[in-house]
Image (cartoon, rainbow, N blue to C red; front, side, top):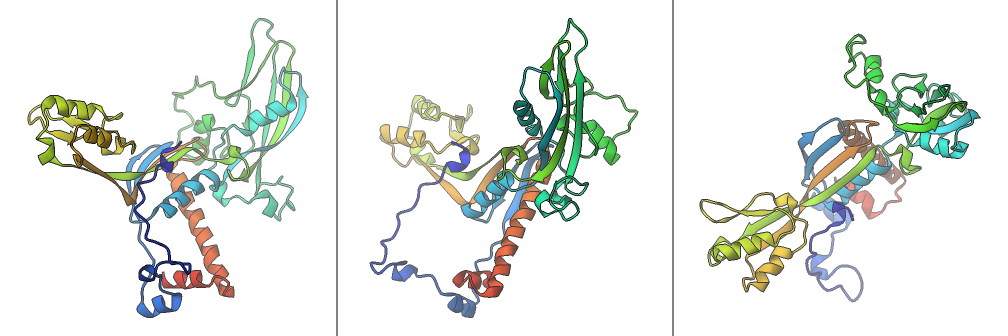
Length: 362
């Protein structure tokens, strides 16, 4: 299971009111009571970037709760739009792979999608009446390959054979051409990655041929995984680890070493000078409770206290290359805000009840 499925130990729940709802001492104020008191549920989350590369990011999300962290994770995986091949018209195919197999492989090739947020969904495009075949909602691709050498297998790849009519939307391994279209790379500079073979589509032997036309459209991962820009998105609760040094000093060096080694991951170590147990990587802790069990087995309960900070999360994001990790995060926040704005607009009809008072309050 992913790291995000790990949750802290839940605190003991108070007894429920036999009449239903919360216990009297935990009753939530109504919208009118809260408005009168000026209270608000509004929070101000903070983000701190730890590491940022084109296809990888690691950041902290603080001062919010798990519902918001998981909402952001799910939006990044399933609701940030990208462009992917959605329609394939086979003109000629004498390869060993059938038409449906090739269409599926083409659909899973990640395409550069920085412009996806500004494109229209085919179903909403009025320029082509929803056909999904105009410049506002689609991009056309062509592929033509024929093997003529009898002694060699021809590899049909996304780099040299799949051609786009729009240089800004192309297979991710054609990033150089994409950057040239944006003016970020000199067309006369030597190509350091010129020998990159790209994504293999099919292999052809002598006399075999493949010719096709494909249409790429905007979509989201909720509709099909080929539109998901995320290779993986996980978050974990930031652990709060505290060692009882007074109790630790009652252990011998061998016992300390045995306790440190009981952790499956490298969370603790022993200082070679002071011989004290130190925390070297708190985020390597996987909430396995092994060190706590070891301390109890040694007759030293309370040797270490480990809690999850319920308002602090560490995210790890990897993309398919369709968009950068920075674009993925920012686009996810934009999509999440649009969804929350839609909820606010629904309150104009007064259908949200107490939730509407929450929104007005913050």
